[in-house]
Amino acid sequence: MQQTHTRSLFDWSQLDITIAGLQRHYQQADFTPRQLVQHLLTLEQADNHNIWIERLQLPQLERYLTALEQTSPDALPLYGVPFAVKDNIDLAGVDSTAACEAYRYQADASATVVAKLIAAGAMPMGKTNMDQFATGLVGVRSPWGAGKNAFNPDYISGGSSSGSAVATAKGLVSFALGTDTAGSGRVPAAFNNLIGLKPSRGVISCKGVIPACQSLDCVSIFALTVDDANLALAAAEGHDLADPYSRPNPYDNSARRYGALTDSKTIAIPLPEQLQFFGDDTAASLYQQAIAQLQALGHQITALDMTPFLDAARLLYEGPWVAERYVATEALFNQDPDAMLPVIQTIIGGGAKPTAADGFKAMYKLQACRQQAERVMAKVDFLLLPTTPTCFTIAEVEADPIKLNSQLGTYTNFVNLLDMAAIAIPAGFLPTGVGFGVTLLGKAFSDRQLLSLANQFCQHSQQTIGALDKPLPASSVTSPAGKGGVDLVVCGAHLSGMPLNWQLSERGAVKIAEGITSADYRLFAMADGRPAMVRDEQAGAGIAVETWRVPTEAFGSFVADIPAPLGIGKVQLEDGAWYTSFIAEPRAVEGATEITHLGGWRAYCAKG
Image 1 (tube, rainbow, N blue to C red):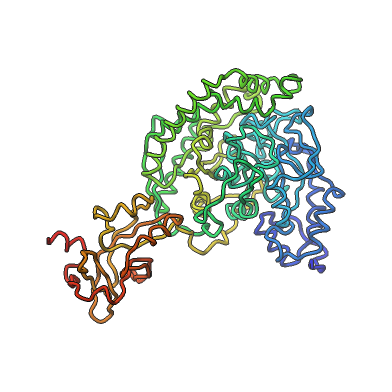
Image 2 (cartoon, rainbow, N blue to C red):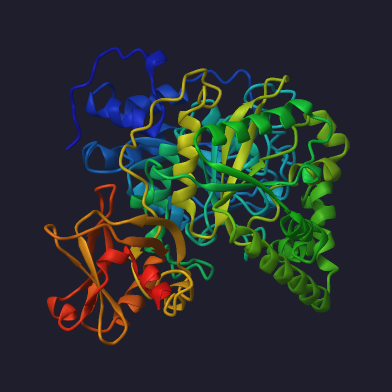
C-alpha cells in the first residue's frame, strides 16, 4: 500500500521532476502523487506558451490517483510520474482533436502506448498543442495558438509536437509523448533543450494514434535526461497485433542493452560541402563542438557522402508520401476543407494529386536511396547530424511557412523513410537563448545503443535540463551497455580470409578485434584438417585469435552447424577476460598434430 507518512511542508523549489528524481522523492516520502499533482496544477501560467489543448483537472485525475493510493512506490516502474500526451494520441474519456476543432471526438479507449504507461503508474496530465494534423516542424500551425519557445517566446517551439516539448522543458511533466513522422519528436527537443527519442518504427504501438503518414509514423518521447527516456521507452514499447505496422523489438534492443559504453564507436558526419546552416554561424560552431566532444570521448569521426540520406529527405514532401496525409484526413478535407488552417489545406490538398504511377516511381527512388544509405552505414556505427540548421522567430515562420518549415527538416525528413532510429540531444544555446541540438542516428533497432552513446555525451557536457536552470543529474547507469550481439572468439577456419569465414559473414557478423589468448592454450591440427584448441595451464601458450560480433538472432543457427568434437564454450584472452569461443572435446586431440609453437592457425596454414 502507499506510504501515508509524508513531510508536512515540502519545499517545492527542491523538486526534482525527472523520473529518477521522483522515484527518490517517493521513497523518501517527501510527498504523495496527489500532492505533486496539486502543486503542478497551481504552477503559474501567466506567461502562456500555448502548451495545452486540454489540461486535466483534479476530478479527471482522480481515478489515476486513487489507483496509485492502492499500491506503493516500489510496485510500479513509473509510480506517480506525470506525463503529457500529444493531442493526436487518444486518452480514454478525453477529446482528441489533432488541433482541428471540426475533427474533435471523445476517445473511448486510450492508445496502446498511453494504456501501457498508465499501467506502469504514470499519470496523464493533459492533451498538448500541436501543428494541425501533425503537419509541420514549426509548432505555430494551431487554432490554440502558436507554440512559444520555452526560453524565448518570440521564437518557435518547434513542431509538430510543440506542447509536449514545452510542457516537459518547463517541468510541468516528467516526460511527454509526441509523434515523429518527419522530425516532430526531434526538432522541438533541440529548441527546448530536451532529449527527443524517435524510436525505430513499430517499437512503440501506433494503435490509437491519429495517422499522419501511417506507414512512417512513430510515437516519440521527450525527456529531461537520457535515463528518463530509456525508462519511458521500457514502459511504452511492445509488439501490438492491433497495429499493422508494429514490429517485435529484438533481444539486442531490449532495455537491458542500455548502459555505460566501454568501447569506441565510428561515427559519420557529412562532407563539409553538404552542411547547411542558412547563415547561422553559431549553430555551425556548436555542431563542430559536438563533433570534438565525441572525439574527446574516444570515438572515431569520419566524413562520408550523405547524398542518399539528403535525397531521401526530399522525397517526403516532394514525392507522393504527402498522399498519405491526404488519406488520413480525406473525409474532412472533402467535406469541409476550410475547417483546416490555410497552410494545412495547401499541404494536404497536394496529396490528392499524385497518381499510382508517381507512387511507384518514388518507391523506386527510395529503394535506391536505401541501398546507397546501407553502404554508408556498413562502414560506421552511427551518424551525427545537426538536429536543425537554425531556429526562426514565430513571425518569420508565419511570413514564409512552407520554405522555413522545409529548411528545419533538412536533417530529419529521411529518418523514417530509411527505417532508422534517432535521438536528439542538447548541444548548447544560440545567441537568441533558444536551444541547439545534434542528433545521433543508427540502423533500425539500434535504440539502446543510441541511448547509451547519447547518455555518455550528455554526462560529459556542462548541461542543464529543459528550461529549469538545473544541472543535469548524474546518470544512475553503471553497468556496461549490451553489445548487441554475441562476441565470438575464433582461432581457425573461421578467421577472416579462411575457408569457413563465410559462415560468419553471411549471418551479418563483423570482425571487431584481433588478439591473443592467455598463455594457457595448446593448438592442434586434427586429422580432418580442422583446428582444435584446448586449455592447458601447465604447458600452454598464447594463440592468435579474432573476435567477431555475431547477431544474436543468427548465433543459434551458427552453433547448430558446428560438427563434433568441437563446441562452444569460454576461453580466456590475454586481458584476463573470458569470451565465448570454440572449444574442443579431449578426443579431438587424439592422433592430432600439435602446432602450439607456431602461435596460431594462420601461421600453420602459411607453413604449408
